[in-house]
Length: 272
Image: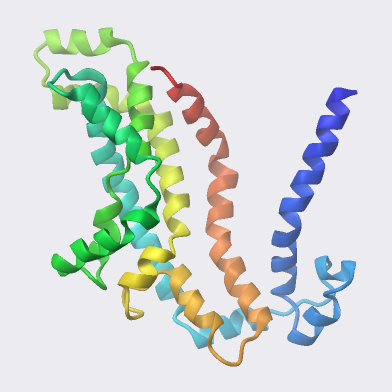
Protein backbone atom coordinates (compact mmCIF):
# COMPACT_ATOMS: atom_id res chain seq x y z
CA UNK A 1 0.00 0.00 0.00
CA UNK A 2 2.82 2.39 0.87
CA UNK A 3 4.46 1.59 -2.46
CA UNK A 4 1.27 2.43 -4.37
CA UNK A 5 0.91 5.73 -2.52
CA UNK A 6 4.55 6.52 -3.22
CA UNK A 7 4.07 5.88 -6.95
CA UNK A 8 0.93 8.04 -6.98
CA UNK A 9 2.80 10.92 -5.34
CA UNK A 10 5.73 10.51 -7.74
CA UNK A 11 3.34 10.41 -10.72
CA UNK A 12 1.63 13.62 -9.59
CA UNK A 13 4.97 15.35 -9.10
CA UNK A 14 6.22 14.17 -12.50
CA UNK A 15 3.03 15.42 -14.13
CA UNK A 16 3.34 18.80 -12.42
CA UNK A 17 6.92 19.18 -13.67
CA UNK A 18 6.24 17.87 -17.19
CA UNK A 19 3.10 19.88 -18.03
CA UNK A 20 4.86 23.26 -18.51
CA UNK A 21 7.49 21.56 -20.69
CA UNK A 22 4.81 19.78 -22.74
CA UNK A 23 2.82 23.03 -23.15
CA UNK A 24 5.95 24.86 -24.35
CA UNK A 25 6.78 22.20 -26.98
CA UNK A 26 3.21 21.82 -28.23
CA UNK A 27 2.69 25.61 -28.44
CA UNK A 28 5.85 26.00 -30.52
CA UNK A 29 4.08 24.20 -33.42
CA UNK A 30 0.88 26.30 -33.26
CA UNK A 31 0.11 29.72 -34.72
CA UNK A 32 -0.57 32.69 -32.44
CA UNK A 33 -4.38 32.46 -32.64
CA UNK A 34 -4.41 28.72 -31.91
CA UNK A 35 -2.19 29.14 -28.82
CA UNK A 36 -4.62 31.61 -27.20
CA UNK A 37 -7.70 29.67 -28.37
CA UNK A 38 -6.44 26.49 -26.65
CA UNK A 39 -5.04 28.25 -23.60
CA UNK A 40 -7.97 27.59 -21.21
CA UNK A 41 -8.58 23.96 -22.19
CA UNK A 42 -6.82 20.62 -22.26
CA UNK A 43 -6.07 21.32 -25.94
CA UNK A 44 -3.18 23.48 -24.73
CA UNK A 45 -1.28 20.20 -24.25
CA UNK A 46 -2.48 18.57 -27.48
CA UNK A 47 -0.89 19.28 -30.89
CA UNK A 48 -4.05 20.44 -32.73
CA UNK A 49 -1.95 21.91 -35.54
CA UNK A 50 1.61 21.40 -36.75
CA UNK A 51 3.72 24.09 -38.37
CA UNK A 52 7.46 24.83 -38.37
CA UNK A 53 6.85 28.52 -39.17
CA UNK A 54 7.71 29.63 -35.62
CA UNK A 55 11.10 27.90 -35.83
CA UNK A 56 11.71 29.45 -39.27
CA UNK A 57 10.94 32.92 -37.93
CA UNK A 58 13.32 32.47 -34.98
CA UNK A 59 16.21 31.79 -37.37
CA UNK A 60 15.11 34.71 -39.57
CA UNK A 61 14.90 37.29 -36.77
CA UNK A 62 17.97 36.53 -34.62
CA UNK A 63 21.40 34.88 -35.11
CA UNK A 64 20.20 31.83 -33.18
CA UNK A 65 22.94 29.46 -34.36
CA UNK A 66 25.62 32.01 -33.40
CA UNK A 67 24.11 32.24 -29.89
CA UNK A 68 24.17 28.44 -29.65
CA UNK A 69 27.79 28.33 -30.84
CA UNK A 70 28.80 30.96 -28.25
CA UNK A 71 27.09 29.01 -25.45
CA UNK A 72 28.58 25.69 -26.52
CA UNK A 73 32.07 27.22 -26.82
CA UNK A 74 32.25 29.00 -23.48
CA UNK A 75 30.43 26.27 -21.51
CA UNK A 76 32.72 23.58 -22.99
CA UNK A 77 35.85 25.59 -22.15
CA UNK A 78 34.65 26.20 -18.59
CA UNK A 79 33.97 22.48 -18.27
CA UNK A 80 37.34 21.31 -19.65
CA UNK A 81 39.53 23.82 -17.80
CA UNK A 82 37.40 23.34 -14.69
CA UNK A 83 37.91 19.58 -14.70
CA UNK A 84 41.68 20.04 -14.86
CA UNK A 85 42.02 22.83 -12.28
CA UNK A 86 39.47 21.56 -9.76
CA UNK A 87 40.69 17.96 -9.93
CA UNK A 88 44.32 19.02 -9.36
CA UNK A 89 43.29 21.21 -6.42
CA UNK A 90 41.18 18.40 -4.93
CA UNK A 91 44.00 15.89 -5.33
CA UNK A 92 46.31 18.21 -3.41
CA UNK A 93 43.74 18.47 -0.59
CA UNK A 94 43.17 14.70 -0.57
CA UNK A 95 46.71 13.35 -0.83
CA UNK A 96 49.34 16.01 -0.19
CA UNK A 97 50.38 17.27 3.23
CA UNK A 98 51.19 20.97 3.60
CA UNK A 99 50.83 23.61 6.29
CA UNK A 100 47.32 25.04 6.60
CA UNK A 101 45.77 22.41 4.31
CA UNK A 102 42.72 21.76 6.49
CA UNK A 103 42.10 25.47 7.12
CA UNK A 104 42.39 26.21 3.41
CA UNK A 105 40.00 23.39 2.55
CA UNK A 106 37.52 24.64 5.17
CA UNK A 107 37.60 28.05 3.45
CA UNK A 108 36.95 26.38 0.08
CA UNK A 109 33.97 24.49 1.53
CA UNK A 110 32.63 27.70 3.08
CA UNK A 111 32.68 29.34 -0.35
CA UNK A 112 30.02 26.86 -1.51
CA UNK A 113 27.33 28.71 0.44
CA UNK A 114 28.33 32.20 -0.73
CA UNK A 115 25.63 33.38 -3.18
CA UNK A 116 26.89 34.56 -6.54
CA UNK A 117 24.91 37.81 -6.26
CA UNK A 118 27.06 38.87 -3.28
CA UNK A 119 30.26 38.78 -5.35
CA UNK A 120 28.75 40.04 -8.59
CA UNK A 121 29.85 43.69 -8.23
CA UNK A 122 33.44 42.96 -7.02
CA UNK A 123 33.81 40.39 -9.80
CA UNK A 124 32.60 42.90 -12.39
CA UNK A 125 35.13 45.49 -11.16
CA UNK A 126 37.99 42.96 -11.29
CA UNK A 127 37.04 41.79 -14.79
CA UNK A 128 36.78 45.43 -15.92
CA UNK A 129 40.26 46.17 -14.50
CA UNK A 130 41.66 43.28 -16.55
CA UNK A 131 39.91 44.58 -19.68
CA UNK A 132 37.89 41.39 -20.10
CA UNK A 133 34.43 42.93 -20.43
CA UNK A 134 32.52 41.78 -23.52
CA UNK A 135 34.99 38.94 -24.17
CA UNK A 136 35.12 35.15 -23.97
CA UNK A 137 37.86 35.50 -21.36
CA UNK A 138 35.49 37.36 -19.05
CA UNK A 139 32.84 34.71 -19.54
CA UNK A 140 35.16 31.75 -18.89
CA UNK A 141 37.99 32.56 -16.45
CA UNK A 142 35.93 33.61 -13.37
CA UNK A 143 34.09 30.25 -13.36
CA UNK A 144 36.89 27.71 -13.92
CA UNK A 145 37.61 27.21 -10.21
CA UNK A 146 34.54 25.93 -8.39
CA UNK A 147 34.39 25.15 -4.66
CA UNK A 148 31.68 22.49 -4.94
CA UNK A 149 33.53 20.66 -7.73
CA UNK A 150 36.74 20.67 -5.65
CA UNK A 151 34.75 19.20 -2.76
CA UNK A 152 33.28 16.43 -4.94
CA UNK A 153 36.65 15.50 -6.44
CA UNK A 154 38.31 15.41 -3.00
CA UNK A 155 35.65 13.12 -1.54
CA UNK A 156 36.12 10.70 -4.44
CA UNK A 157 39.93 10.76 -4.25
CA UNK A 158 39.81 10.02 -0.49
CA UNK A 159 38.06 6.73 -1.26
CA UNK A 160 40.71 5.57 -3.74
CA UNK A 161 43.12 2.90 -2.39
CA UNK A 162 46.47 4.48 -1.58
CA UNK A 163 48.29 1.27 -2.60
CA UNK A 164 47.88 2.18 -6.28
CA UNK A 165 49.73 5.45 -5.84
CA UNK A 166 52.33 4.11 -3.39
CA UNK A 167 53.41 1.32 -5.73
CA UNK A 168 53.78 3.83 -8.57
CA UNK A 169 55.78 6.18 -6.31
CA UNK A 170 58.15 3.30 -5.38
CA UNK A 171 58.71 2.82 -9.12
CA UNK A 172 59.82 6.46 -9.30
CA UNK A 173 56.69 8.08 -10.73
CA UNK A 174 56.22 11.80 -9.99
CA UNK A 175 53.06 13.20 -8.37
CA UNK A 176 51.76 14.60 -11.65
CA UNK A 177 52.44 11.32 -13.48
CA UNK A 178 50.58 9.39 -10.75
CA UNK A 179 47.67 11.81 -11.05
CA UNK A 180 47.32 11.69 -14.82
CA UNK A 181 48.21 8.00 -15.43
CA UNK A 182 46.67 6.33 -12.36
CA UNK A 183 44.19 8.59 -10.57
CA UNK A 184 42.42 10.08 -13.60
CA UNK A 185 41.72 6.73 -15.40
CA UNK A 186 40.09 5.23 -12.28
CA UNK A 187 38.10 8.41 -11.55
CA UNK A 188 35.96 8.53 -14.69
CA UNK A 189 32.63 8.51 -12.75
CA UNK A 190 33.40 11.71 -10.82
CA UNK A 191 34.95 13.42 -13.86
CA UNK A 192 31.81 12.58 -15.85
CA UNK A 193 29.52 13.79 -13.08
CA UNK A 194 31.33 17.07 -12.52
CA UNK A 195 31.52 17.67 -16.28
CA UNK A 196 27.78 17.13 -16.75
CA UNK A 197 26.81 19.25 -13.73
CA UNK A 198 29.10 22.05 -14.94
CA UNK A 199 27.55 21.92 -18.41
CA UNK A 200 24.01 22.03 -17.03
CA UNK A 201 24.83 24.85 -14.60
CA UNK A 202 26.50 27.17 -17.09
CA UNK A 203 24.19 26.44 -20.03
CA UNK A 204 21.53 28.35 -18.11
CA UNK A 205 23.80 31.26 -17.10
CA UNK A 206 22.03 34.58 -17.49
CA UNK A 207 22.93 37.26 -14.93
CA UNK A 208 26.70 37.40 -15.52
CA UNK A 209 26.59 37.22 -19.36
CA UNK A 210 23.83 39.86 -19.33
CA UNK A 211 25.87 42.49 -17.49
CA UNK A 212 29.26 41.85 -19.08
CA UNK A 213 28.35 41.40 -22.76
CA UNK A 214 27.25 44.33 -24.92
CA UNK A 215 26.90 42.85 -28.41
CA UNK A 216 25.93 39.65 -30.23
CA UNK A 217 29.57 38.72 -30.92
CA UNK A 218 30.02 37.11 -27.49
CA UNK A 219 26.40 37.03 -26.31
CA UNK A 220 25.32 33.48 -25.27
CA UNK A 221 21.98 31.87 -26.06
CA UNK A 222 20.11 32.74 -22.87
CA UNK A 223 20.92 36.46 -23.13
CA UNK A 224 20.32 36.56 -26.87
CA UNK A 225 16.86 35.10 -26.39
CA UNK A 226 16.08 37.67 -23.69
CA UNK A 227 16.61 40.48 -26.22
CA UNK A 228 14.59 38.50 -28.79
CA UNK A 229 11.64 38.19 -26.40
CA UNK A 230 11.41 42.00 -26.21
CA UNK A 231 11.67 42.65 -29.94
CA UNK A 232 8.32 43.89 -31.30
CA UNK A 233 6.12 42.27 -32.41
CA UNK A 234 6.24 39.72 -29.59
CA UNK A 235 5.02 36.37 -30.98
CA UNK A 236 4.55 33.77 -28.27
CA UNK A 237 4.72 30.86 -30.71
CA UNK A 238 8.20 32.02 -31.73
CA UNK A 239 9.14 32.47 -28.07
CA UNK A 240 8.10 28.87 -27.39
CA UNK A 241 10.07 27.65 -30.42
CA UNK A 242 13.22 29.45 -29.21
CA UNK A 243 12.77 28.10 -25.68
CA UNK A 244 12.25 24.56 -27.00
CA UNK A 245 15.47 24.68 -29.00
CA UNK A 246 17.36 26.15 -26.03
CA UNK A 247 16.05 23.42 -23.70
CA UNK A 248 16.77 20.55 -26.09
CA UNK A 249 20.55 20.25 -25.32
CA UNK A 250 19.83 20.03 -21.57
CA UNK A 251 17.21 17.32 -22.10
CA UNK A 252 19.61 15.30 -24.26
CA UNK A 253 22.43 15.61 -21.72
CA UNK A 254 20.16 14.64 -18.83
CA UNK A 255 18.48 11.69 -20.62
CA UNK A 256 21.75 10.12 -21.78
CA UNK A 257 23.92 10.89 -18.75
CA UNK A 258 21.58 10.82 -15.74
CA UNK A 259 22.90 7.43 -14.55
CA UNK A 260 26.46 8.81 -14.56
CA UNK A 261 25.34 11.73 -12.36
CA UNK A 262 23.81 9.38 -9.79
CA UNK A 263 26.75 6.96 -9.97
CA UNK A 264 29.34 9.71 -9.57
CA UNK A 265 27.61 11.33 -6.59
CA UNK A 266 27.11 7.92 -4.92
CA UNK A 267 30.76 6.96 -5.37
CA UNK A 268 32.01 10.36 -4.19
CA UNK A 269 30.45 9.65 -0.80
CA UNK A 270 30.42 12.14 2.01
CA UNK A 271 33.51 10.94 3.89
CA UNK A 272 34.80 13.41 6.49
